[in-house]
Image (tube, rainbow, N blue to C red):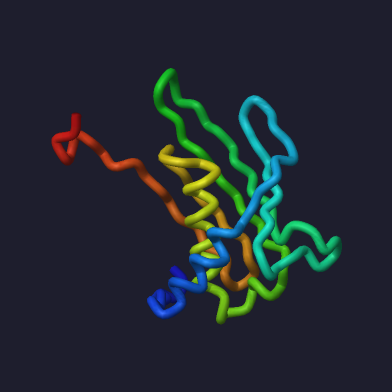
Length: 132
């Protein structure tokens, strides 16, 4: 297991400013997957000068109602590999899951050099909270 890192609240507003201005362009879609180019203000792909990253959203259908989504994000700007940007990388991952995937159960795999990580996003289990 990797190091545990604390998120610093003083960077929250700076992260929010970047993530609120992110944009996406769908590059490809099939019956089970989507590929998005991710444009992050202040960052770019060093080879092309274009999108700083790519998100691949792959749908695994378990039946008529159940769905699990595997989301892979690859960030290409080496500046995002810097340790001082790890909180921003986490914020980018959260925002991409919120905007591109929504509320489905999701396994995120973020690739950003030393700032790479995996996370699982789960819907709230209504049976445990006495839901509807």
